[in-house]
Image 1 (cartoon, rainbow, N blue to C red):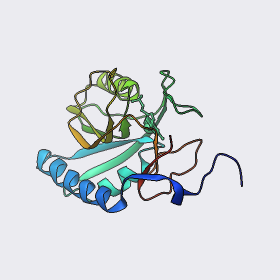
Image 2: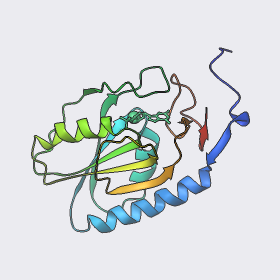
Image 3: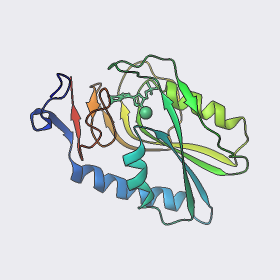
Length: 176
Ligand code: 5GP
Ligand code: MG
C-alpha cells in the first residue's frame, strides 16, 4: 500500500451517507420545483462532482440532459492553486443551465466556468454545490442551491479526492 492512503475507518466523518442522501433528495425537490415546466441542462464539473451529479439527477422530476466539463484548480495538493484549467465543447445558448459542483471553496472554479458559459447567452445559469466551505476570502458567487455549509477543513469522499484517492467513500470525511 502507498503512503498517501489511510484506512478510511480512521477518518473523522463530517457528513454520513444518510445525511448526504437525505439532503440530496431535498435538493432534487427544490430544483424540480424551481424549474417546473422547463427543460434543464445539467452540467457536472469533473471529476469531483460525478457522484453528486449522478445522485442528484435521480432526484429530479423534470426533463433534463446531463453533460460534464473538466475543470480543476487543485492539482495534487490540499490548497486551491487558483489557476483553473477547463475543457469542454458545450453549446448552451438559450438553455437553462445548472452547474453541479462538489464544493464551493474559493469560488475560482465556479466563477471561471460561469463566466465562460455566460458568454454563450444561456436562458439562465445557476449553480448547485453540495458543500460550501466557510472560508473568509471567497469569490462572490450567487449559489442558488447548496447542500451543506462546512467548516474550513480538507474533506474527501463522495467524489472528492486527495491525490485521486477516497472518491469512493459514501460519506464526507476530514483528512486534515
Ligand atoms: P475553488 O475553485 O472553489 O477554490 O475550489 C473548487 C474545487 O477545489 C472543487 O471542485 C474541488 O475539486 C476542490 N476542493 C476544494 N476544497 C476541497 C476539499 O476540501 N477537498 C477536496 N478533495 N477538494 C476540494
Ligand atoms: Mg471540483
